[in-house]
Amino acid sequence: MPPSTYDKIKKSALQLFAQRGYYGTSLNDVANLVGIKKPSLYAHFKNKDELFKTVIIELVDVFTKKITMTYQNANHLSTREQLLGMVTSMVDFWKDEELGLLYKRSMLFPEEQFQALTYEKFKQSEAHTTEILNRIFIEAIRTEQINEQEIPPLIDAFYCLIDGLFVQRFFYQPEEYEAKVSHAFDHYWKGIHQGGI
Image 1 (cartoon, one colour):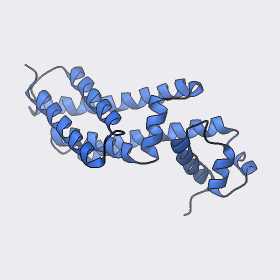
Image 2 (cartoon, one colour; image 1 turned 135 degrees about the vertical axis):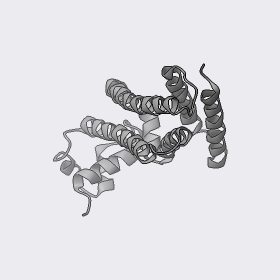
Image 3 (cartoon, helix red, strand yellow; image 1 turned 30 degrees about the horizontal axis):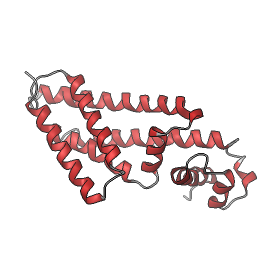
Image 4 (cartoon, one colour; image 1 turned 45 degrees about the vertical axis):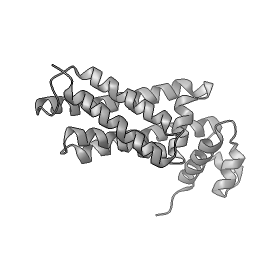
């Protein structure tokens, strides 16, 4: 079934917002990319703000669903494999030329009028990811895959690892970046595996 005009508008808007930002993208640009006249956009979105908000909400939802699927598909694996899968899933998302670029723009440099929305969606996504990480670490301690220890520091350290890799993604070529991901995760795992009481 071919995508609807509504979906084509969102996809085109995501591409343009990622490349040019909110202010660098006009509704004319979106309409031209879709192959429709600008007035046709108003049958689906009342203005550019509504279109941008829709794209941002769906962007974060896609990220959250990706993390959920990663966990569901790997929860039978070892703790190390599950955590590496989470890191890899996030890294792969950031590599996407449109999704990753817009995620960076919206999270690091949100437009002032969208800061509250961006922050709210980010906190929701982080809360969901934290719940998954909490489950992974509870099971890891129960099955003695890591030593008994407080879980919040493990989660905090995971986020610091992820945040560092997120920023580095935009400064290094793929081969160098993959090495950094591997090295950073290996040291993170050694730390949490040997840590605790």
